[in-house]
Image (cartoon, rainbow, N blue to C red; front, top):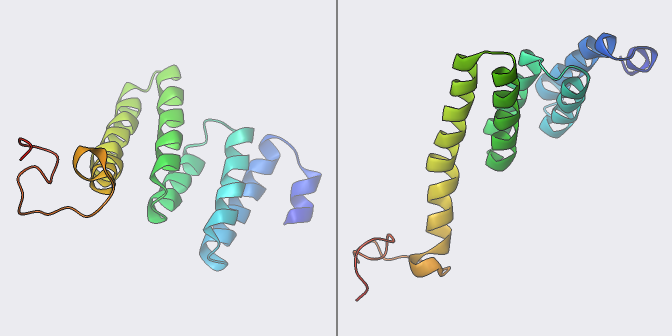
Amino acid sequence: MLRQLSAKSGADSVSVLTRLAHNAADKLNDADRALVYLHQVLEADGENREAFGETERILASLERWHELVDVLERRAEIEAAAGHAEAELTCRVAVASIWGEKLGAAGQRAAGPAGRAGPQSPSLPFAAGGGADP
């Protein structure tokens, strides 16, 4: 397949890169290699929904939330430019959900009360970041 890829360019390479990505993810269990191929697909065809979907799936399974947010924001911009308001909104809601559920809460837990790192005591009302200081 790599020989096929070197012989093709542009849109022709998309099908080969897509197959390489699927092989890397499914047969080799190499998510990072699959992501490299998928990024190449998106460079060649910036509106390839299959590549976006597979990239999003892999990043979510790896819990690489910041990268997933970047991909979703890129996809939202492409959907907006194409006039697909519902698809754009879906991407933006997913971004907000990731920030709210995965990144926002994790960042608050890691910082601890008053922005300090360290363990928190759930028995204290201010330990979760709310309430008055003692």
